Length: 312
Image 1 (cartoon, rainbow, N blue to C red):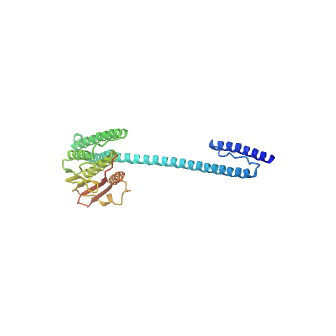
Image 2 (cartoon, one colour):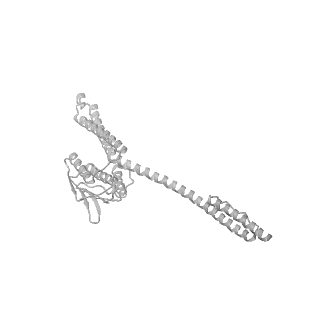
Image 3 (spheres, rainbow, N blue to C red):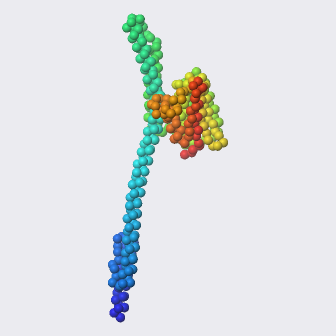
């Protein structure tokens, strides 16, 4: 009877300790352990249960370490994403500046150089007494050059205001076909001596606003290059669609062409032409497209932008 009573007492104590252990584990205390029983058969069970507790605790510690590592990884990724976003924004701003203000400033620099040369020539003539003083102030060249310079400064001021407005509220392009058509119309009105033709063979195209803006800027830069460098008589602008689902924008002229050094293997050279062509390639890359520039001296230039339809 005494032995049975002892076994019952051991069992009751074990069940009480087991119940407390279960409650501790359920509350999240994985450091909880069961006190070893004096009964041999229960002692082994207590030991095994404590081993289970230790396994739970070790697994929790590993999980916490993994969570900390994942949290740090996620934080690093967020920092990298922010860094890339800042870099993309800087590239975008640089592209916008080049496509507008930088072009005007380059023109201003040239006009100031021409004005300076004219003034130096007049000063030289005056010093050699080949001009009367009154003639110095009625020289038509100086007046014309000053007027051109004033117009360019006003244009630069306008473009600065437009850029500020653009960066405050990003430009929305409603329809790429109409935008290209507007660029052609503006080119036609500003360059009476150059004939320009626009042909659209795209019935309907769905692009996100970012892609539309990049395509417009590529067309704008190509037409600026035609105006500044090509000496062309005829320019053709085409929007094409293909059965493969691809699209292309083609701008070609019959001008003097451009040196291969401007677009093959010299992207790192810091000149306006190289920077402009590099930005055009970057814009094409941003929309998942491909830009090809074909030219031979005296054979004109063909700019081909290939791209796919991408909705928002």
